[in-house]
Amino acid sequence: MDADAFTVEVAFGLPHKQRLVAVRVPQGTTARQAVALADLPSLFPELPSTAFEQAPLGVFGKALRQPEKEVLRAGDRVEVYRPLQVDPKAARLERAKRQAKGQ
Image (tube, rainbow, N blue to C red; front, side, top):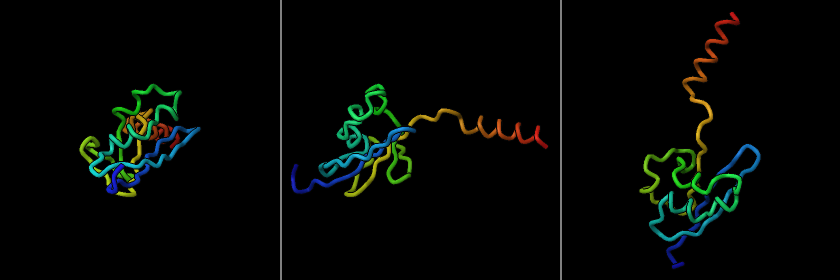
């Protein structure tokens, strides 16, 4: 790596296991590239290796619309998000139905 390289972190977690990987990257590295460099499939062999290729990403809790174009800065933490298990709108509707029955 050249002198312009810097470190970022890539974070991913399952309910039973979380990992934060420090990765040294060159200037111009995108969020998606940093995830590939973190080699998460080797840390989470229980998931298909393709699970990380198109996963939604964020930086410090802010979702990225285009992670393939988001250039990182030194110290950034890239977060790999899991797909939602339940649609938030459907969950809210179910809660409202349960509360209405209870009243």
